[in-house]
Image 1 (cartoon, rainbow, N blue to C red):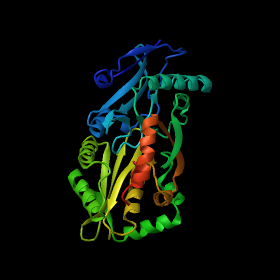
Image 2: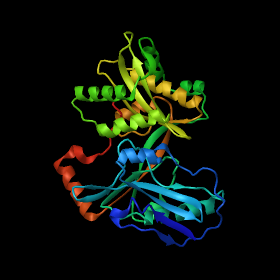
Image 3: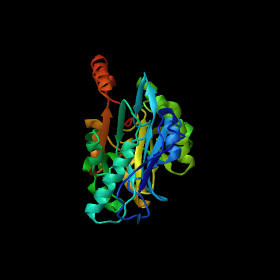
Image 4: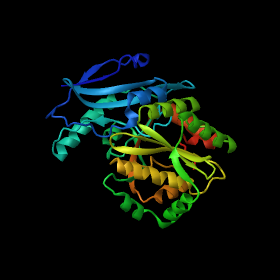
Length: 345
């Protein structure tokens, strides 16, 4: 029998208790590493991104962890909400593969994911974007979730630097060559310098920090300190920082997390930084993931780097009252309809 439970300490507010769901286990010869575990699933990341307001659904067989799924728990304007926290671009279930044949492995994933979903407390709105390594959301669909698709571009860890350069669009290569003539790429000295640079550029554009400034500062400090990420800057001939990007990584991928540049910086500054990041990812034998996009302009920019288009499945479920309230809000305040923000290019 599989034990399925959630963290009772974190779920006390919702009255969620551990329970047992009967499933048929054909084999529990779990492989070494669960599928689709990313840096965004790390407890330290979630602690900072949510302010500690998250829980973990789990499925176990004896002492073997077969599945887990983190989710945040917030109350907003009286609603119970579970959406992606700031700078957390994907989440979703992490199911340990058993090394079975395709049919039985699929059954195993479906059974474990269903057990994880059934542990979720009631939310007026639940939304998660799944890691691109999760190629089906059948269990969510059968549990009443709406399933849609988002996209990202990836450059495989099997690709060489030479091949990556050759696959890049010629226009992007030319922009990078031009930026190299006047800019130098070096690490940004401190996380504080990066955050200040990011905020200053937003202020000049009369925009707010969509990631919550305090959370962003803590996360940047944490991933740099843990050597799970890096800040790269483009400096002009006078040594002035004119563009910067933030990168994070796990055992599988390096993610292009965020970026910023001065309004008057060379138009190829971010392209040069992204190309530098791609090279560093391939040297580490990591897949480079542009980490999604939500506008035509950003899509065209990122497409120029020659990555393969990958799907990210989006799962969402909302109560009738919440859905009605959201429609009314979108009609009154159209700009509030999206919770996404693209990198500050």
